[in-house]
Length: 109
Length: 120
Image (cartoon, rainbow over all chains, first blue to last red; front, side):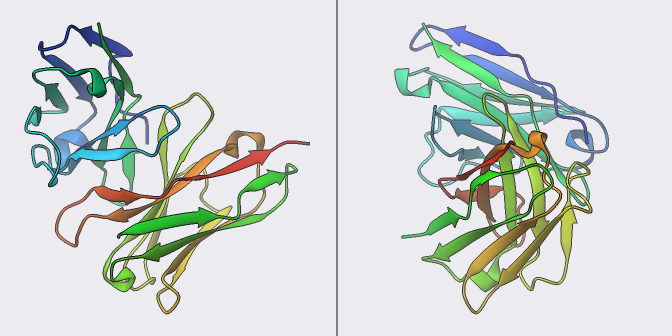
């Protein structure tokens, strides 16, 4: 149950795009379609942004999109806005457990 | 409004026990699997445990297996986490979370969290 690997931080100016990678193994990310992404602002509970690799819950802006190739999943935020500045975590089902990513801080310059 | 409210956190000595509760409202609690996720101070999220909708199947992270027990009372719409043999490394904010539905796998509703501090 090793954590999925994410970049420590990414940054971009408002209106630009950022992509966060999430690398696992064939036992988690590569083995299932159940990758989800969570946004967490400081001192707040996580919020679901993407589930099942590329599905958006109602209320999540379509600026957020997800994809997966092999053992690596990705979250792309297009048209970056100030309120997108937060920590982002990926998560994958791994059979009888779940595993989170190491987390990525998104900074809006 | 769909809501999860954790309670039971606090300061506990190493080796001690604590039981966390998570009261659910605004949805049919008995229809969803539920989970515990924790976050150590300044660290990332860690999945701790999960239980199915009927309460007869449970799963644990290796880090807590044999020490923590998840359970639920569907008649009270409440999820529990019994934590025994607590260690300093169990210090964290503990969140309860609801599975999005029976087909997809994600945590769509989260509580505000309850802090557990293990220290002498």
